[in-house]
Image (cartoon, rainbow, N blue to C red; front, side, top):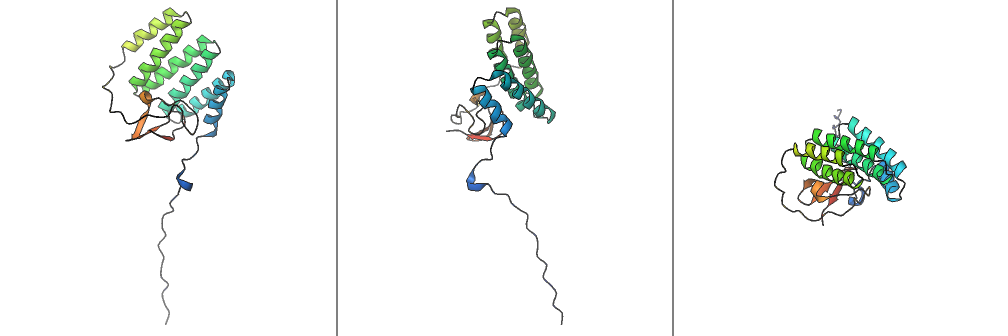
Length: 183
């Protein structure tokens, strides 16, 4: 008499990327990189500081460290060595907190060279003593291809030695988190 209605099962919704494209980098990161490239270092420094603070609050320590280091580079371009040193030390602490001693060592060595170049020998030597306390670097991993110099999404510098590899031929951008393919 009465037919029972057939119950349809709902399928989970799958999100597809349009045309296989990567999602765009966050606009604030792209804007900060653009300001840096245009030579507007004071505005770029503020933008990087704000982005770093947001990343740290969200628990993204490695991203916060890279953004803080970029703010330090801005202050160096402005010849504000005290602000650059302060940001650099904070970035160094964030790298240590994120258990990335290799990145901390490389950044600290660049900081020490910049401090020496600007006549801050005592601060550079104190930094070098602190770097000696870091664990010894582990042996380098196998080479997985060459990464482009800049992230295609946000324009941030991507260095092979500092990259977080997420696959056999792809690494994560330290600034925006997008995946960068090795060539």
